[in-house]
Length: 306
Image (cartoon, rainbow, N blue to C red; front, side, top):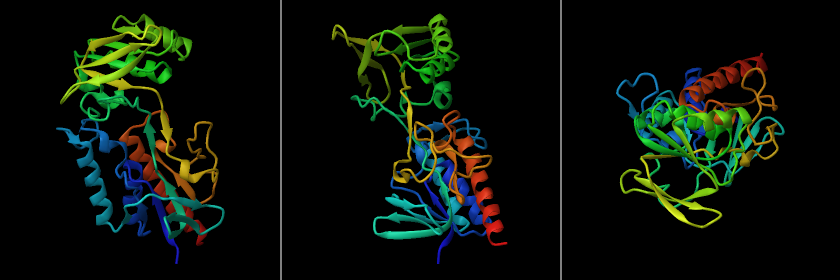
């Protein structure tokens, strides 16, 4: 017999959806993935999630989310979905050879930040290396930091970080920004922002925290050492939608498109969090969408069963 609700993904959106669905007695199954907990698992201090005045570690926050979902009866599968078929109901999802069938599906697989792939980046992620200025900018008050990128998101990150940092250096591999003219001009005209053109980051330096970067000029091949306290990587995000293929409508970047509520182009399949949202990308907005998706699924299921 098919489950009522299948949730794919276990970041703030997926787990909040599970909590609401479980409390509505929908007995949800959540396939959380091997990389459970979403991007907060890569975050050290979370100080902007309501209810934690002293802050909380990202992994600890997600563990509390998970316990709450389990408390209300969510069945959790720690594996990755390998294939889906949303062409008819019940909807089907496979984990290897194991088949799961459900009357409704909530997709909350999130998005992954693109990283530079340089030495020191992974080791220092959460210790001076970040992909979210809104999340982590506060920790860099009166510090010197770099932003890597040249698009609108890089300009937004750099401008936001000027509220805290003493100096923001934008590292860009070309001799002009890809960003819109207005955003580029705002960055170029800001007194706290400097730009290093035609350059890439070769290495992020530091043992327990970022102390600097090695920057290579792509024209001269000369490597320069820059002393600073943080590196914000702003070269884009990729929604985690590969497994869904062309089963539903997405935008040109692969983000799932939803209608007036959280329903996708497939009736009975809903989506929430960063797999939809390329603007805010916050834990609290993802959690809010997860709540919406669970309520939307509950109401849709009620309508189906008369």
